[in-house]
Image 1 (cartoon, rainbow, N blue to C red):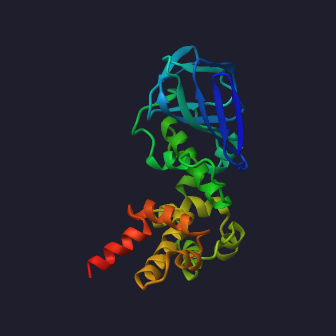
Image 2 (cartoon, helix red, strand yellow):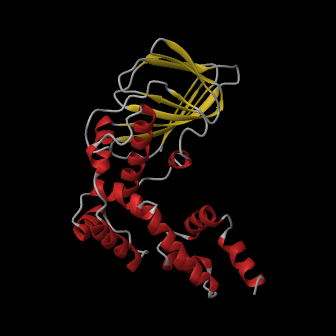
Image 3 (cartoon, rainbow, N blue to C red):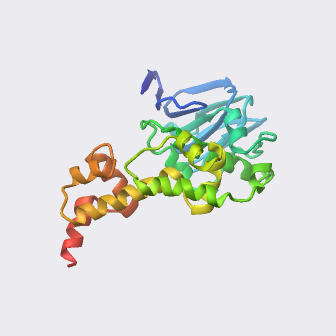
Length: 275
């Protein structure tokens, strides 16, 4: 993690992922001069009022609102009040967006400010923990989520040729079965491709359409299934975490709480109390 500090600025970058850079920034009494990126910039305001000039108009982005900037468009950035503002943002390589959408022209979002509720909650989750390195499968899944949002807000949803392709259910089921067989094992995308005969982008697109979630999330839930069985049988949380393939007990706790709203300890205590 890189930290860059200066008068009025604080920038914190997440670990690198090919074609994707994540940043958390805070500005107080400072501003970004007009500049432009060769990437998409998709961010959410966390606090304060963010203002920026974009395509000839002054825009305002409030907490919970998103901003979407197209590559090579000049913009600046400043706080709308003396309290400053903070935001998280992802910079996406246009080639990654094009791959995620299956080719065709890049989507252009005319209105750069998207109101709360205009973006799915899964996008905020992508930026919730920028310090965590992304596995290759997660990188593709996040790229698909952001590309889908760009396409939807550009008014061209469903236009790409890959969007209309029928689901390869038999091939996808082999990926699913590979995960179910031992969710503690972290399979590579190359292994998914070998098992299914599909390319990685098709797997990422179609798995969610077929099973309602991504391969990464599906594996996490199967890991949690195993952990719950072990915890219910009296296995200590640290041992359950290891057996289910989590990095450590704290990793299990974060995933468990995110899925069930309780820590493993509270869940186990409630289970015993209910018997």
